[in-house]
Image 1 (cartoon, rainbow, N blue to C red):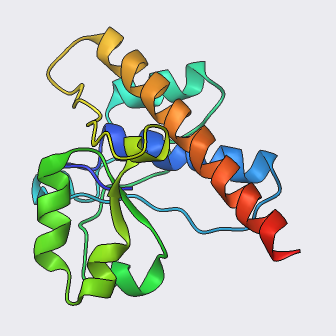
Image 2: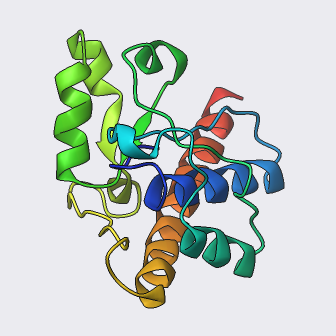
Length: 154
């Protein structure tokens, strides 16, 4: 899960996805990161923490980190929050195979629509609630896709 500062959207996406994998008994590794070094090592924005806690997810232990080329080796899928994040990740891609792992997270719920998750940082609390709603929908679709792939392998 990738956004700009790794303190608002991507920590929420990571927390929601971890919880849904746990609930659905799906083994998987989920992490989040960003491209803005200013927040490296910081916890998520307090508004993200509050929104997550209100929805039964605790992201207080997360710390912002920077995206690295090695993330392509560690993860099968890399979900970005918006078009700028996509460009940032694409600039780090070493091969076409790396780039094939990257997609806008909202494409999970609305394939091919290329909808961004707006950055709530400069807005009020309602922006974080909207971010939660969008990421909740996208992560539901990701979980359903994983479940479908598991059934196909049986």
